[in-house]
Image: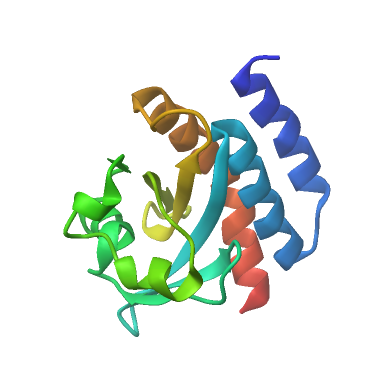
Length: 161
């Protein structure tokens, strides 16, 4: 089955879901499966407070960072995906999160997720591709996926408010 067919099939399952928390978990699980990654976090943009915070972060409690912090913050600021295949050599990488959780990040991919008004509402971050490094094909897949799930995520966030 082609990747885009898998995404379309997933979209049908997501459309039937009405639970906000479950929708976010479903999106993260599908993203991990699509890119063969160990973890996925979905950071929500809060411009009013100047922060990004995790709606979902595998294996660790809620993460809160400044809008301009880390690789996720850079994704938000530049409005473009990021691939970092050697994070400990990247000055943007927030090593303290790994230290706190005991997790070791080998590589990172991030993409912005836009709302219906074309504002960034969240940033999806995947960690540790199981085989090899993240590449431009992964960016293409994750961008497509982010565009595909953006409506469901926006609806879930609106329902929560």
